[in-house]
Image (cartoon, rainbow, N blue to C red):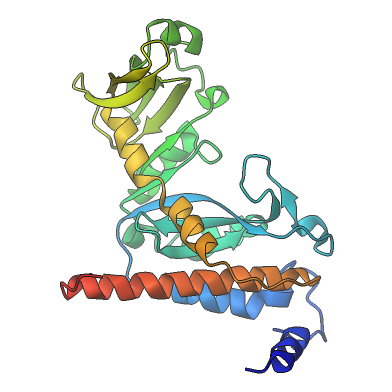
Length: 286
């Protein structure tokens, strides 16, 4: 393609008729392609284990108004915040903008039993009420880190006392009636997790971590629930990593082109994962 033709296409590319304008939809500029790619993601053969996390679509411009957000702990701090459901292998199966949560729940509440076996999420989402509700109403098992102020009076040991016991120390609490368990584990800091399915027992495995005092790696205790979370939670992060490797450089003052660029990259990434999956099924080495 000639450079001038590419520049002309970038200049005139559009996804909707601007007359009339749907003021109730903040993403009407890209709604057709947004929904089209989302439907294709939903149609992909899915597993039973999913991670749910935030995804930032990078955008530093000011034309997007309040659609753009700032999240301090993200590699791309400015952009559009989307929630993503991804398989543990990096496949994106569903996504939506954070202001569209209610519509997504309404559309998929009837199909949740068919799609999910277990979901993993971080402390932005996790609460004792949510973990109980998912299992009771839909039969969905869940595991996630949880903030201290959401423990609802659980009498588990506080962080300071647990850290005094040393790295690898942990304490657990169970509610057999609601079928949930809370575990707090001491590493460099304390981390608290709640689960509705990971078995709890006194048997723990060990992991190797660096010790500053001994200046060497040592073995510390690690409960099963920690390893389960670490091994299954990274689906959305894996997608972010794969997308960032070959990100489409589509610079423009029009905010919706940043969304289109991300959707394009997600589509290419899914196509590659599907290709790799089919080769693996045919026992062909990549």
